[in-house]
Length: 401
Image (tube, rainbow, N blue to C red; front, side, top):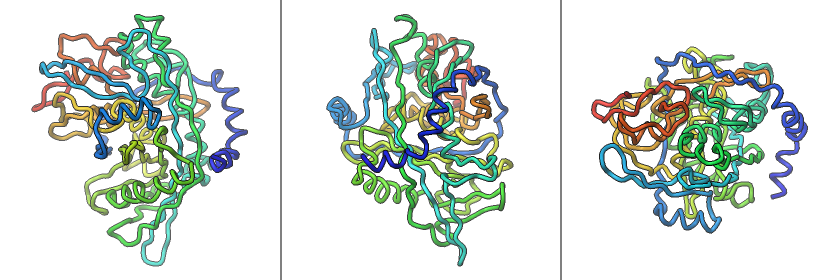
């Protein structure tokens, strides 16, 4: 554990300043940004090293992340069971559950001919006023609590995704002590940067553009193999990450593709789990370049998307009635991935003198409720900023009410 303490030492002064100042500088206004033409994609890879029952047993023993089980009868008459990270919003008198996440800056090198291009999230970013992605992330509402409103409902002073989870189940939890018991605060730790093996050759990685239009694209299958079978085992062996923590790998201006160079756009982030007990992890891109290609996705858009999906579907095997043809999904899907239906629908959150760009997210009720079943979500709607006024339509044809 000494290595982790060394890793965060350089951030201590900034952290102390932020903790002291954030309440006074955070602003409450959350403004929607037009994103109907966005085409970015996110992925998820199901855990295949055990069953839900085994994962819950390991969770109860403290060997993996805190998880709770739910079972719900949906609009199609079927019963769906799954797991959420943290506390149980359906339990009378829930108590706060503390979660732990380790941020791992992931350095990616792409070799084209004799040239090596390095994408390092710990380095000063000339396209973001000289602030590194890691520092910008640490100062963000993903890490720091602020006063939050969703659909006009004040859910309290929480980190963005913790506040979203409260909003998602607001009409369930607010009947008991104003909802104060249900919370899943995240304690963040910061690892040293980790160098992956280089992506050599155009089939594994390419660099597009230059200056503040530059970004890298690497092979998605190879990236995940590097993360699963190189980064995670090494970091576990060194005591930097453990199965009872989420490992969040932060990359900078690097996307992935199933086929590098394909005209089809790219994966900005994904989450999964590997091993038993399951080590949950996510790979997220902190994007600060190429706005013509990626806007409105920027800075914490991807991390808010993947962190919320981890909270709602940590093992990537929570099933739902079929939904689709909305957001990034063409055709029908049946996973509880609350970022995908609103992929590209980005908000502006003014925080600590900077405009962050978290994503709007679908509520739990959007996936399961009929048109006549009230939403559990804040404001009685079906997404965190009111984009979905009704629940998902049956797929096919899909879409939203």
